[in-house]
Image 1 (cartoon, one colour):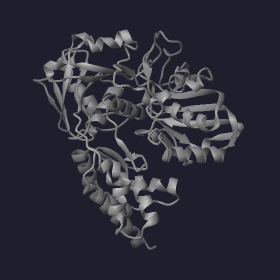
Image 2 (cartoon, rainbow, N blue to C red; image 1 turned 120 degrees about the horizontal axis):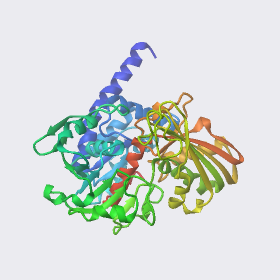
Image 3 (cartoon, one colour; image 1 turned 60 degrees about the horizontal axis):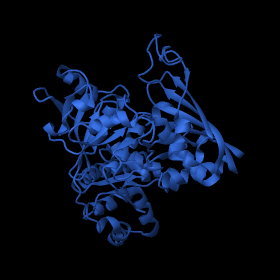
Image 4 (cartoon, rainbow, N blue to C red; image 1 turned 30 degrees about the vertical axis):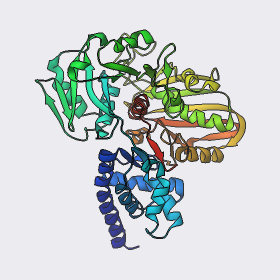
Length: 476
């Protein structure tokens, strides 16, 4: 190809990607249909992000998917009357063009592949959501909920609860608007000082000031039967989290930290089937537990696990000191920005709450390192069945694409991958395939994860399940 032909092909792809954006947005706003390409969501994606998502298909299919191949399928989708669903445009396009040479059979193909969404009706009402606490996870959850707001979306962010006084509203809005790790907010943010509210991309968010959950009456703000997401970590048992249920207008509670006692610790994709309509208090476990459990489940299902050790290389967090000072935890008082800090993690033992077959089989430690976000789990396993690196990687690649864990497990083949490349990843964990070691019954896996954003995506999935939202995953 000549220079001109390369440039022409790129410009054509860019033009088609630009044409896809309004179709993707309209499908979501009007019908609650979420479009992705091989598990990479396209809602609010830029033209370049849409093109890059198509390029990733080559990792799974051997050749890249052209935007010109997926555009006619998306256009045909936009003309269908669909129930809320999660539709993988990449899988549809690959399947269609493997058996067709033109668009003449597209209508019949889509009617067959999407029959369950075409025949289904959804009349459910959105669930009010309150974020109790507005720190790192709270603000990322707000971004995700605002990003996904639409007429048919089942979760509606109505309020946030913080300690302090109303004179810090501008500061709260500024922290949502700008983020040193995740970049600027994608949209517009206004502040209503008189009514103590933040308006973000048209979403009216009531800011409520309270020092205790029982002080709040959500109904006075028009918030009813709310799902309260506790991001503070102050209360982690049923008694403490039960305080939220005493607030007028609150119906259910989700904890964004490991729960204690009999509280169900949920890793979405692994044991979310445990969430029952009558469950009032649920935990979304920890970021590390969410990162390692899907990979461990995949390995355990095929090879079995005798025992193992998980070493987490984890970015520093707010509970550490910037410079040396008193801290009740061992070693955590030393400067987070200057030291690698050896500490404990409950993630290895917490895996057993989602995967009972691994109870007592895993140990774990953590090393906090001087980076602000993105962590890695080094999973060292002794297996029941022998394998090798190529076979294990091929299996995990398949699991990342064609299994119920495709939203949780991502797979990388890059030899240049470093931690900042994973900032903003929506997967629970990313398998670094070039680092995989496997021989006979021993295996070592390296799993990256955005311990803030990737975890927040998992929390939103648990929120949807608690709200009774079951998106049809297509094609099946």
